[in-house]
Every structure is written in C-alpha cells, then in structure tokens.
Image (tube, rainbow, N blue to C red):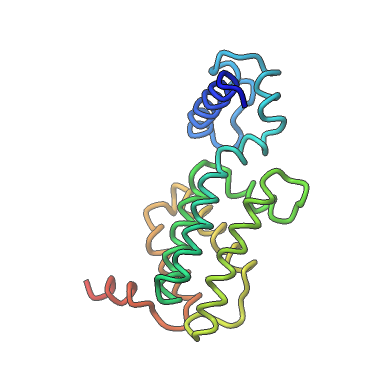
Length: 192
C-alpha cells in the first residue's frame, strides 16, 4: 500500500473507532466518512461493507486474544488459563456496543467478513476448554460453541445498564458453572 493510501486508511480507522465507540455497531458509515472528511465512496473503497470495517477495527484485538490463548496453553494451569482468557474475551466483545451480536452472527456465516475472527476466537477458547476438560477441571458436557455462547451472553449482559454493576458477580457465576472446581484465582478472591 502506498504511503498516502496507508495514511488515509489509518485516518479512516481512527475516525471509525471514535464514531463506533460513540454509537456502537449501528454507527453510520456516512457519519464516519463525513467526520473523516472524505466521500462515502472513499470509505467504501477501503471498507466495502460494515463488516469489513469491523473486521479491520477488531482484527488486531482478535489476533491478540488468539495469541494470548496460545501463550496461556503453555504457561498456566488449564483452569486458570481458561478463566483468564474467558475474562479477556468477554472484555473484547464489550469493546463496542453491538459488536457481540455481529460476532455471534458472523460465527455461523462463512461469507461474513468477521467469520475468520469469530472462528479464530471460538477455536482458541475451544482449545483452552478441551485442555481443562482433559485435566478434569472443566465440565465435560460443554464444547467451544457453548463457551462462545456464554462469552457472548455475558458480554451482552454486562453491557446492559441494569446488570453492569453485577458484571464481576455474573462472571464468577458463569465461570463457576464452567469449572468443576474453583480455580486457585477464584479461591484467592473468595478469601479476601
């Protein structure tokens, strides 16, 4: 990519991040173009669909979460790795209002621009879950799809004003339902 095109692309992403932070997944592409001081055609040249824009906005975070899962697989006990990654994944899906629904629907749609990121997140979580199941620290009757659904549901709940103050409590309820015994981090928190 030419230097000026790369600069324009970065500028569009920065403005899009701002607009999407303010308005969530329903942010207007027209508003993004207007605020970036470019024509709508220029925005669509870089991001032909809303999903393509979200893929660009979320791709780096999804890659980081996938990398984190790989690192946790080798550096932490299975239950702690699963809970740590699950917490980060829930936080990731709360990045922008409405992104949780986009990621969940993209998971089942191979034609979606977000499908690759969604599938990578699902696979990373599934590996951590299987590892904990193998060690007997996670329920055997769930799979990666269940974990992804719980992550999405918890992120949505925590984003609702009525439930936001209870986000940590809800997180611990969900993770205690996933694990067969409390992780050492949960035990430490309970003793405080």
